[in-house]
Picture 1 (tube, rainbow, N blue to C red):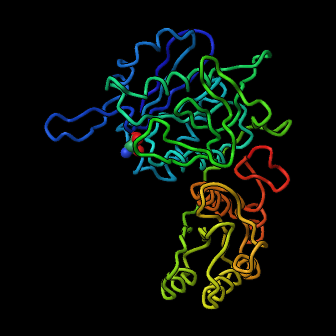
Picture 2 (spheres, protein in one colour; picture 1 turned 45 degrees about the vertical axis):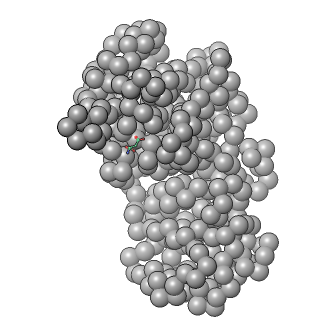
Length: 356
Ligand code: ASP
């Protein structure tokens, strides 16, 4: 990893982790290989036109985001903490495949964030003529430098900037392996749209609690699993997973508004797990909308078995939130309480439908 600095005004730090944005075609194999940060910068000479003070920090070697890991999320949080006082905004260049997980994890790890942390990447390498990487990178830097009339950062949360939209980091999901609009935030409006002008959606931008001091909480506990229900799911598999002693939390991806088959062995397995101290969270397999367990008997039976509602959280968010809460060492009841409420803008509270 390295740190360098150039000139002038608002200070934006680029943290390069890897991903397609910094890849180049290997002429021998035809596969995409990573190349270093200097090469990346050479392909975006436009950056010299910014009146910002750009600094950089590069992973060495850069990684494909499939190789991301909670320890690397912690490393990103540590880098941000180290340069926090000397930087106005951070841009993380990251592969798209697991960007939603990293964005969610960082949104929990960075407490009382008062500066933008914006993840971006691209579908085509930056050296390719039709690349989306240049536009994404330039937009992300501009958003990371944006300030209000008092000079305070316009954005004070973890976001993803992609395909002309700034999206809340813990609300995004990679929805396309093909389109330049690779990310969607189905349950939360964009925070900003980068058209001819940058239009911010001011009323939904997060602000830290008054007087809150920026800190990092980087401990994560990976003893969690996500299960997608489907008709005909095996009793043996379900009973095995729910009784497995090393699992602390289960994200259950249910049907529609949070419904599951009415199979006594399924609710028995869940009830036993919650009685043993596990946390089972209900999120829907639908991309849009939320869980309402009281709506049908097929959902209510889960509530009675001790399942907590994940409301409209994405699977990426629910998994990393559980990892984070268990990582803080909270007991079962506290994890259940915090899964049910927003702690970083990650879910829509029942009376807060204005961001839908
Ligand atoms: N495999 C790449 C990654 O996630 C894909 C991308 O960057 O879009 O690192």
